[in-house]
Image (cartoon, rainbow, N blue to C red; front, side, top):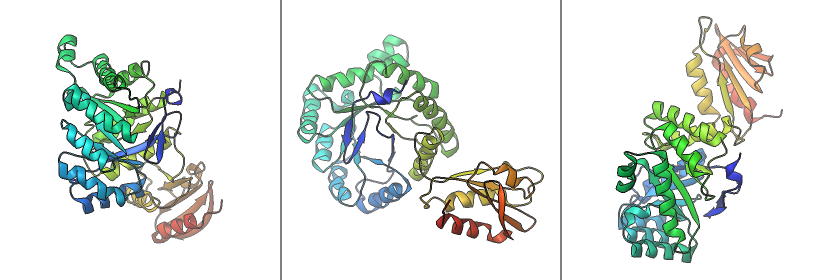
Length: 352
């Protein structure tokens, strides 16, 4: 069942999520938001890499006010991430934030939440209600004897109801945990009980290595079950890696088209070329080429052409010789050192 077909639509800046619209990729800046130039530079780099929505931490009033200048210099919607201080949420919206992320449970009493909702309603700014496994209400944790998928879903719906009861339903829900299967179960429960669009991800996933694996497994399961309208791959590292991984997850699941997919053979005793280095170079080289096709990088001039049959174009090399291959047929031989340049030239002048 494709739950994302049934979620409400929500407009974030000039983008629309929910209702079967394409899944959008989100990341978060790791600059000081008060540093306008540094934050803008990072957002622009993330945008070029394929980020659709960007989130910025707003821990101070100076950060909230910086959003106004940041917004002038970026082209994607900006989400303000707020914890505890309701005045920062209001200031961020007044500075032009396209969406705010809050947990009503840590914003304060009802009057403070109502003040935030009032400004959001006046400006028609979506609110993302975010609940993490680490921020669950004490009473739920004590009642359940710990943090459970059922508890995190209850908390999210409870927080959402607080805002709905104030007459506002322009909402996105996010429930996150670092335990992959916990997260999967919680999302399966949540989609049975709400039609608000969902932002999904595995929180505190870890370093580039472990974080990519946990996010790929968790998001792969959740997205393949028709759940999720926006995603973030959370990594302890460069946010650009989050976007690259998110794009590949969506493309692998058939949920996004566009971009060159690079496939390469595993190394073996027959390999007579720096295949690992070459494959990495090709992957970096094709990032700025707007084609939707498959490129194979093979390490054997004997088996390479046959193994590259499913790719649109490929290269293979060994013993100083390079081959250019199309659909399994060798179309050109060249010195191995020219492989990368020849492949790029072919792709820039692609006419399949």
